Length: 241
Image (cartoon, helix red, strand yellow):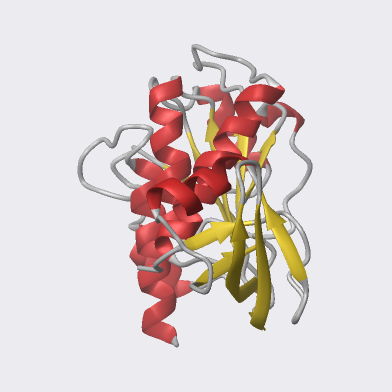
């Protein structure tokens, strides 16, 4: 787990002097109790990791000097979770854990059986903060994007393979389907709300050539299903590396 890692939404360039304020300043000064002369790690959520020296900590900002940087390229295999809007407490868990498990994008859409049909900009901003915290904790250099998406009936054709959890008895296991035809350019997995996907949504997904698969022998909660899907995807991909 990274130690003393902080987020700054700006370019992180070698030998540049930067300022940290707000919540990250509180974390730096009062949680990590950093002192002048100490080194910390910085991420910008866009693939850059920097090591910086703390120069000075004031009441409203801290000054740091970047000594080294490394960068990662975005994944050539994007992993998308399309999640029907669940209850707020479940959504927090989904964002946090899916970030840790490697999700690149979260598309939140109003499911036919969703209790909640929309999200405010302030709610999306709060979810992004949760993703930032999870990325720092898990060592990721990219922050997943979180966007509001239309209902399934208005989705355009997908340019990457689209999967969804199928509860029917004859649904193929995700493992078997992956081994038969592994995705090569990325994957999107659709998750229903607490009451599941409506039969009309399943038909709409099938028209989009989505593939229904079985994730588990049991019926999974809406906040368990994406974690299971992401864990399996990560495992399948590691087995092929």
